[in-house]
Length: 119
Image 1 (cartoon, helix red, strand yellow):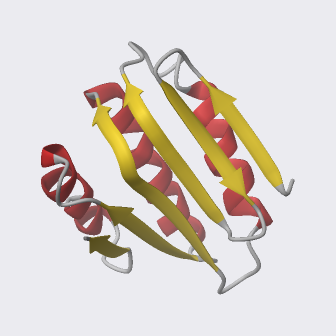
Image 2 (spheres, one colour; image 1 turned 120 degrees about the horizontal axis):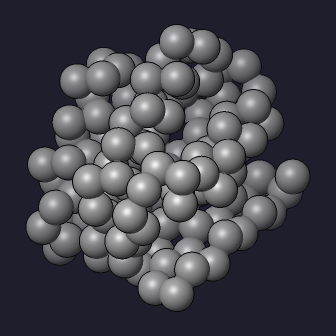
Image 3 (cartoon, rainbow, N blue to C red; image 1 turned 60 degrees about the vertical axis):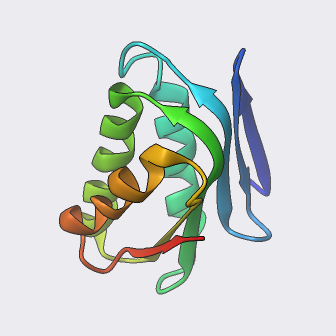
């Protein structure tokens, strides 16, 4: 899987295997964890593709909105990655987008090794 992409009405999520980055763009307002299942699957597949001790980057810098169901899916993914402890996880965000600084930095509470970069 070098590039995998999911498009919704107001969002896209893309995994680029060359850069080992999952990029989130737009506004994600899906209602249930079932609706987020394809995104969760993309995250798990990306995780499994990374070499041991490699780094998977989650780039939220262009994601304007993520509802609580989406934050829950991302949190579960971080917990799963922590349990496997095979890769490093880096999270990028934007200071320009209000929710990101608080919500993304909370991911470090779930796994202290998560690198957070809010620019």
